[in-house]
Image (tube, rainbow, N blue to C red; front, side, top):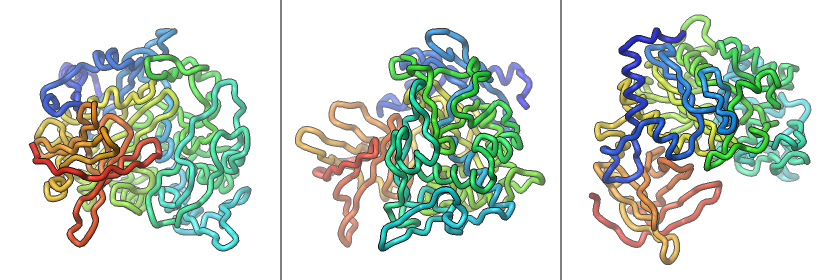
Length: 478
C-alpha cells in the first residue's frame, strides 16, 4: 500500500523533516523553522512515527528515534503506540456499523439496549440518552478522561469503572446535564458504549472491535486487548514523562478500552482514515454506508464536532476543504490524526512522551505545506486566518488577578494570547467565540454581554478548570 520510494518522494520527506514550523512567538512565526530530529532532541521526544496519506493511498510511513530511552530500540513503522482518545472514533465506527446493519438505532434510548448496566436518574428525573448523544459528547455524561492503571495495579471490570467502584480510580459515570443541550467531552460516555457493544454482540470488547473494524479495514497490527498481549510487547513503545523519563512499568493499562485502549501504528490508523474516506465517497464495499458516514462527519450539538470527530469550521457543505481530526493523550503517549473527507489526504503522527504533539507541533503543518492541503495553511505561513469582524473586538488586556493578565494581540490577521511572563501562543478558532491554544491543551472563550454584544471577559479552560478574566483595556492590532 506504500508508494515506491523514488527520489521525488525522498525529497518530499526530507523537506518535511527539515522544515517544521515553530509557532511560539509572533515575530518569529514565519521565519523560525526546525528539523524534526532537532525538535525531538530539544524537547525530549524519544520516538515519533508518521504515516502520510496522499491521493487516496498511504504514500509513506517512517519511524524516528527510539521506542525506549533505556533499551534504545529504534522506532519503526511497525512499532505499536497507545492511540489514547483516537480509540473513540474507531469505537464509533463499530457502533455505526451496527446502526447500518439495523441492530442499533442512533436516536433510541440506550437503556433499551443496555442489559447488564443502566443509566440511572434521580427520583424526579430519568435522563433519556441516545447513541447520538454519546458519540457527539452531548449526553451530559461525567468523567472527562482516564489515567489508566500502573503495571502492578489491579485492573477493574468495565462495570466497576461505570460504578466508580474499586479498583477503578475515577468517579462514577453519571448523567448530570441535560442530554442534547451542550457539548462536554466525556470519556465516561464511551465506557457506556463499551458495555453496550458487549451486550449487543455478546463478545469481549477486543474481539468485537477486531471483527467490526480492525480486520475489515486491514488494521492487522492493532489491538484493543488490555493488558497488551505478551507476544506484542517487544514491538510496543514505552511511554515517557516529560524529560524523557520512562513510565514505571513502561505504560499504563486501560480498562476503559473504548475510550483509550487501542494499541496501533500510524499506518493502521491511516488505513482507518482511508476506509472512512471511501465510505464518504460511497464506494461499494466500504466500511460504512455513505449516509451514516455523512452523519458521522456532520456537526451535531456544536458546529465543530460530529459523531466522535472534530471538524473544521468551513467546507461542511461539499467536503472539499472539510477535515476530520482527533488528538490523543495517554500517560506517556501523545498522537494526532488529521484527514480530509474527500481529498484523499491526511496524516497520523504518534509519539511516546507526554504532550509529544505539542513538542513536534510543526510536523503536521510541514506535511500540509509540502502536500498543499487545501485550506489548512493560510497564505501567511501557518498562522490561522480569522474573521476580523469578530477578532478585532477580542483584542485587549484581560485581568485574571492583580499582577497577572492575558493580553490578546492581533498579528497579520490572527489572534495570539500572551500570559504575563510567557511567550505568545497562537489561537485557533473553533467557533465565533471559542478558540484553542496552539502548543498547550487549553481553550479560550470570549464572553459578550448586553444589547451591543460587547466583549467583557474571557474564560480560560485547562485541565477541566475554567477561570474568568475581565477585560480591562482595549489595545490596537499590530
